[in-house]
Image (cartoon, rainbow, N blue to C red; front, side, top):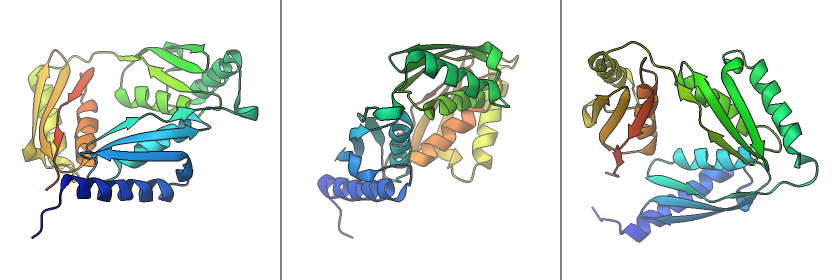
Length: 225
């Protein structure tokens, strides 16, 4: 079996990323540049919405051998996409108020030069994620700073750890034996080695679903077999 050099592997990953960007209808792949160094992908270029910048990053992370991504894509708005901060703030407030699972009354919104800062407190991480995802899709938004925190649940560290470990075992995308879970004051630390970014991300999502978790630090390494 011939071993590939780092440069050869990076070229393969680059082509896979380009193919995935071209495959995604949310992205104009010709607007995005892709550089790969030791399977760390750097995205460059200019797009006309924050949603497209975010979609490009998600597309890269779907590629199996990617270790990490640096998203240096610039958002440049044109024509009707350009909105003042008052219009953006009103659009964000309306979108969050209409979201069925979003506790809108707990969220504070600040808009400055198209950058939206979200703060407040919600019970679950899926709500925090949904709020940020909703705002990213709003026309005129250039960036989203998510400072929303999670309210604590009355669970012991041992129970939280056991719940996360059982969730990892149930997850078909994750090799649970390769991941270690440590809990410190409602903070989950994940360590170990997996073979794809998607597996690392699935483990993190499982940890976030545990009642009582307010922070997840994902230190799992991605290594290609």
